[in-house]
Structures are given as structure tokens and as C-alpha cells.
Length: 274
DNA sequence: AAACTCCCCTGATCGC
DNA sequence: TGCGATCAGGGGAGTT
Image (tube, rainbow, N blue to C red; front, side, top):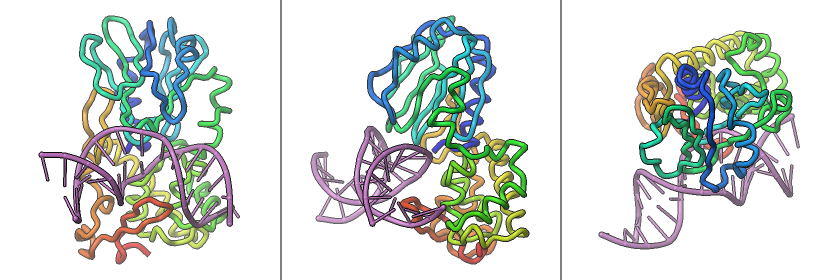
């Protein structure tokens, strides 16, 4: 499941191979993702344009084009963005293909089609339905202890739901939320506005720590994730609670528990997290 | 505001 | 061996 660190790795592997390339053709499978791929709009925006930059906001990746357009994407649950030689067979569930020069393609593969692929002008993009609702990216300088604290004090939701809310913090998903709460020693069931300053500071540090470790370990390949070169990450070996129900806590030895919050699994140590 | 429920979708897994 | 049910979960929509 691609979250912020995985999207960051995709962006970092895309950047050196994509910037400066010209897009010569766009194809689609015809099958809709979360919403239909608008092939005509996609082609109009991309064909003939050169890639100027590749960046990330939350779990979205953005490819800035030389014609003032931007290609915006989300990998959903199972999406992959992959470089491939044009002569290589396309794997199943390839839903979009950008042809670059010299027989190279950038392919969007997504079995479950929960992803997003759209184009906007640079002016439209920040006001788009995808980006306009996002809170702050936690790797932005503005994501300070004070910023987090103000949001915590303002919310009566439990910490799991609070941290999963992309409208508050953009980029955390199930894995990194569970891990951040563990490292902060906070129960996923605790209400946000009961955290207080000392614990708020720990939570802020834990969020940054798990995201930076995730990137340093090249992402968490728990199920489908690979970067744009097709390489798996290694962070799945560095998890303390996620996916470890019934196993011993690496800190205290207690059994890791699982509960369901908002229809999603939460993993936590009942002894270390209060 | 927040907490529900349902839905999108495929593939892995499990019980019979 | 096979087949249907269940689960995985990011995000959006609709309802309470």
C-alpha cells in the first residue's frame, strides 16, 4: 500500500529517468480507475510535452510538463508506475502507457484500479478535487510541533482516525500511522484533544521518524509496492507493530493486538501505548 | 464534527 | 480440486 514514503521513492526513481524526456504517445486500457481515464485530455496535455519536474504532495505524485500542464496521479492500493522497454510485454492491468523517446515507456499498472490519473493546468492543480482537500504534507517545513498541536487540540476523534485524515496530515496511511503511534507510546484509541503538549511533541517526532526511516529503507513492500525501477523496499522488516498481531512486542514482549477502527485494521502494543 | 455504512476492485486465503 | 465467501484497505459518497 503506497503511502508517503513509497510515493516519495517512486518520485525519486522517476526523476532522473524522466526529467527532460518528451512524451510522444499516450494510451489507456479503457477501463476506469476510481474515475475514468480521460484519454483525450491526457493526450492533449502530454503528447509533445517535455517533463520538467517530478514531485510529490501527500500520496499524490505530480509530473510537471513544459506546456504548463501537470500530470497528477495516485497509486491507490495496488498502483505501480514502472519504466519498461516498449518491446517488453505489458503485464496484466496496465491501464495507461506514456511513450517516451528511445523505446522506453512509463506504465501505470493497477490491478484494483483504486488509483487516480488526471491532468490539470498548473493553475488548476492546487484547486483540484484531489489536492484542494489535503492538509499539510508532514515533510514540509510548516509541519511543526505547534501546527500538529493546534490540530490535535481541535479534534475529538481518536488518534488513528485523526492521523489517517488526509485533510489534516497528507500522506500517512495505515502502516505508518500504526508505527508512529507505537513509537510515540500513544494508544490509537486515545482522543486527539487529550494528547497534551509533551505527548504531542513525541507524536510529531515519531511521525517524522517513521516517514524518514521508511524512505531510508526505500519503502515498505508489504504487498504490492515496488518503485519505478521495479525494486522492492526493505522497510517491512523494520515494522514494530503493523501486521504483527499475536507476535511479541519488540520492546516489552507483550502480544501485539489488532482492532478495527473505521473499517481498517489497527495494530498496537497494549502495554507500550497509552 | 464525526461516525457510520457502502462502494469501487482483484487477488490471496480459507472453509467446506 | 474447486468454488464461494471473506478479507485486504485508500478514498469518496451518502446518511445518521
